[in-house]
Every structure is written in structure tokens, then in C-alpha cells.
Image (cartoon, rainbow, N blue to C red; front, top):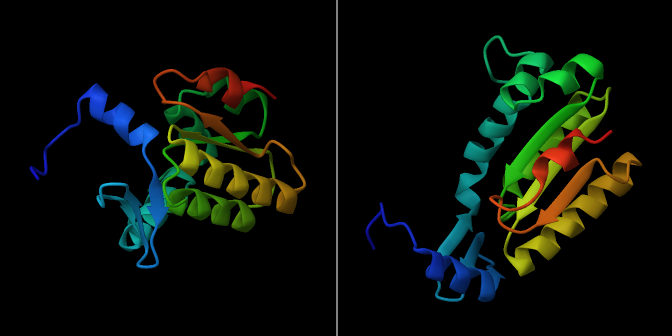
Amino acid sequence: MDPFYRPYEGESVLYLEGKVEWGDDGRLIDENGFAVMMRWETPLMEAHAAYICGQGGEGLDDNDIVEHRGQEKLAQESSVKAYLNVGFGMGLVDTAIESHRIRNSGGHWKHVIVEAHPEVYKKALDFAQKVNTETGNVDSVIVLHGKWQVVDIEVTVCSP
């Protein structure tokens, strides 16, 4: 398959209506056997999380991160940190983001996940429930079901 191949809308619909499987070999695969996400991506996802959470980006502080996410007003009015992930997959980046919450306790933390695939969405809900139970905050991780292009992210992230 061409590495620069981009599915057309019809293929995206087929994927969203198809089954996925979490393999014993550390892969999330679709019903055609194509890898959606693989365990070897963990270090990359951890690096992304460190950067956006301010642990690996040079000169970034919490306000820089929030401004970068387009939430300038939110940063000025409160200590809310807002993180958005589109596509839960195997939860690699989300797990890494939450590891930074543990290390940087303090302030309110809002972590929003947008997931379009129904089976993966259920896994994301389980992840959110676990984190929200552990933190004692019922909305610290919020999962939205749908394509990122159509879900109402702004209202969810910015609401207190």
C-alpha cells in the first residue's frame, strides 16, 4: 500500500462501521488486518505528552501551552489546564498525559478525547471512568463520540 495513501470518505465510513481488535501482539487492528495503532508508538506518544504538558518543550509553561491550544482567556481566569486528543486508539498518549497529572498535581485539569470508532469509544469511556474515579473528579477526562470535525469541542473544553 502507498505510504501516502489517504482514504476517501467512503473508506472512513467503512472503518467506522467495521470491527477492530486489540491483538496480543500489541496492535490495534481493523477487520482487514491493517494496524490502526501499535505498541511501538508508545515512546513517541510519551514524548508528545511530555511536550504538550510542559515537561519536554523548551521554555513552555502552563500559560504557553494553553495559549497554544487557543484558550488564552481560560489561562488568565483560572488554573485550568486543557488537553485535547483526537483518536484514542490504544490510549497511549492519553495514559502518558495522565501520568503528567500525577506528577504535576495542583490546579484543575481537563483532558478531552474525541473518538469516532464505536468500539474504541467504549475503551476510551472505560479509561475516562477509571481516571475520573482515581482523581475524584467526574469530568477531568471527557470522551466525545464522533469525528473531530463535527463534535462541539470548544464548549466542552472551556466550560468550568
